[in-house]
Length: 414
Ligand code: LLP
Image (spheres, rainbow, N blue to C red):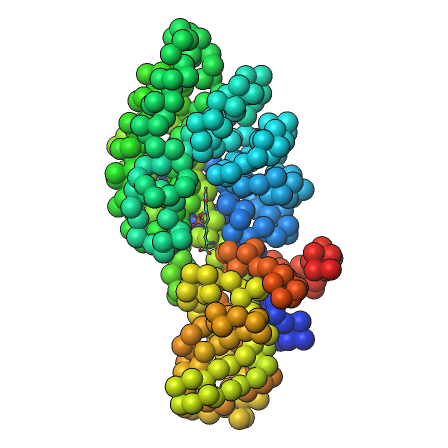
């Protein structure tokens, strides 16, 4: 069951993502309620890349979330979902000029500059626009997470180093008088930092906030008026999923706000961009067992009808997602368990969805395996590799199925 919706009705439609919007609403509420206890003004921009499905975005928009995007494709999707341009924050380490111009044309609320050249281009073109420009700082902060998920360390391609910002201002603005500088820097209103994803230790924010303050002081001395600090996303979701009482969000926000307030006054607004922590635990992936093979006692495989193209996190990051076996015939279920690799149909040896799953010996074709906590970066990173269609996703809300298979998924799969 997802909400009150019986999942056995979908057994003929596997592989299939099933998402509970009510669960996502609870997570957003937890963010909103907790932040509002510490800050009179704040913005939560959901990081669309985690799951960009339209029904999800439409609901988040209705529930008062803002949104973070990284491409014109995501910009168009955000506008289609109903987000007002002022509630859109545009990140992206390699935005093309066409993308920047489109964002400026619709006057998105915030554009994060990741290069000095991009910053000058944005400042040159926002003098008569409402968009706020932010500088993404690379604070050279090492974090504990998978190497692919670090974005704020010295070896990272994201953000700009403090020294380079200083040098850039020196080179570019040295001929301007203080009042000319102030006028030119009016659109520059924020500092952005995103340290990475699945961050295991929030203590790093102590150091990062200090770096933020250093940049804030520098920008102020140059004549810029900074009104908000955006700390990105990154809250970890463990293999066991998110806690029912949302204590992870509560502890995280409490810690962030304490650290934030050591360095910044009430007038500075906090912006966050949570992705995974909002949506990860709200979806399951329903798959069907196709075959079983035992090469020898140590090498046993269960083949399901979802592969790395449908569910890429295990093969990309060796991510572990919990799983549940649903036998097709309960009377045949054995007591004994064996270790199997759950693998997919894709023509790659790395197409492994779980390397060491403990499954009942009796597992057989026709059974189902459900992967849990797959709401973030799973379907949104699915590909057509091997010309396999992207799996569909259905949504439940308030105990009901929203629609069996939305038309746009069929269209995407053609
Ligand atoms: N803000 C920015 C600028 C980001 O780049 C990201 C994620 C977020 C916010 C949201 O971070 P979250 O709260 O979801 O950790 N595909 C990887 C994750 C890539 C994250 C990319 N950026 C995975 O499956 O683990």
